[in-house]
Length: 268
Image 1 (tube, rainbow, N blue to C red):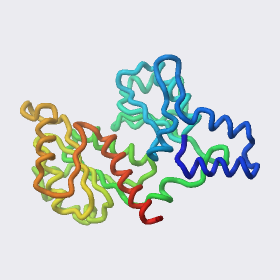
Image 2 (tube, one colour; image 1 turned 30 degrees about the vertical axis):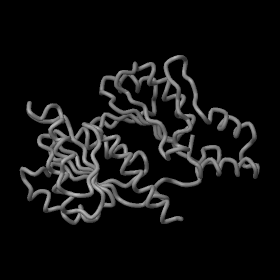
Image 3 (cartoon, rainbow, N blue to C red; image 1 turned 45 degrees about the vertical axis):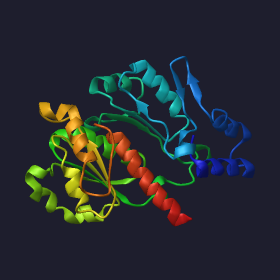
Image 4 (cartoon, helix red, strand yellow; image 1 turned 90 degrees about the vertical axis):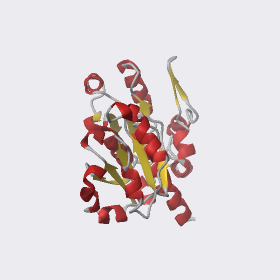
């Protein structure tokens, strides 16, 4: 279910006669949550509460379950997104969901539907409400799956994204050559494995919030991401928030919430 402004738009459309009572009832009857057989309950109310719709965690679900969840969710939101989808799973999904798009490096599937009428709940786009640029930075090429998960999630949520790849501290000049991009960011998401030092360096250059994402990339003593996680938590640079290991999705949603909060206060 859409957020408060979109719900208001629907109710006003019903009141003015642009949307029939039957269509309005269909949109509202599953406002809270919607059960799918015995295996899922779709939280249709989430976008109304938080500003972001529910997203499907693909890993561990069967292809049939994902398809059924997508077919229900596409009736309630303009973007249906599933994370951690491997290529062979996408192939199976695509055979049943013809308009499914796949972002292989991010391991994300999405259905993106156009909005053209009051029945489609379209008073605005996210870009119109929440300006600003999220800059996503990766330390190394091996960190790209997590970095792309963050970038694609932010883009599918309607935010502007710029990417800066393979600028880890082992070749610090690569990062320093992009100081203008760092300075222009509204929020920075910095993704790094190994020892995880890059967010501290970026935060020392930036005047905007830095969201640090440790990855499970590294040799044995990195302990599958625990070493960079601890480095980021112990950073000597101020202004860094840290999400869980490999959690590019969570970093993108946090960045979006920061921009939405700024926009809310500017409008108020």
